[in-house]
Image (cartoon, rainbow, N blue to C red; front, side):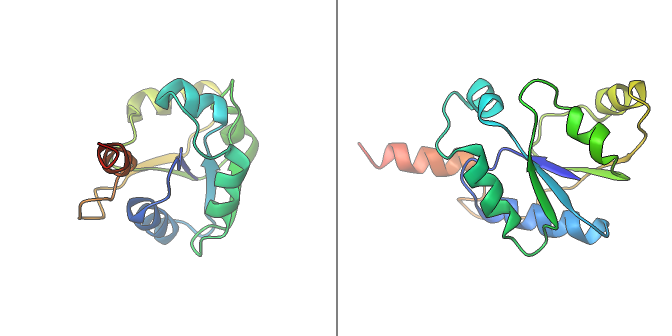
Length: 136
């Protein structure tokens, strides 16, 4: 299982999902809800269901779901993945995540992948920066 906001899809996301798929037999991807994106990014550019549809269409993805806006562990408890894959810039403490999951009776292996893409526009923040600076 992998997670992401996928605010604006880019090569960093694609490489992350390809790497995640190489680590598991079936890749389930959880797309952040609009409420989560708004809370963490301030603005929703593309609604969650549309982001989920785009992620679901990618070759490495076997299933894509929208995460619960209140309980981020709910989908993990429902799907019970063997492995949770974190991206290089996802702000999660692996120890804290393992603890929260163990409190719910879950013990998936947690794997953090390293940066997989080089280049100027491999992060959402860089794309947004490029767009906003081009308006000047």
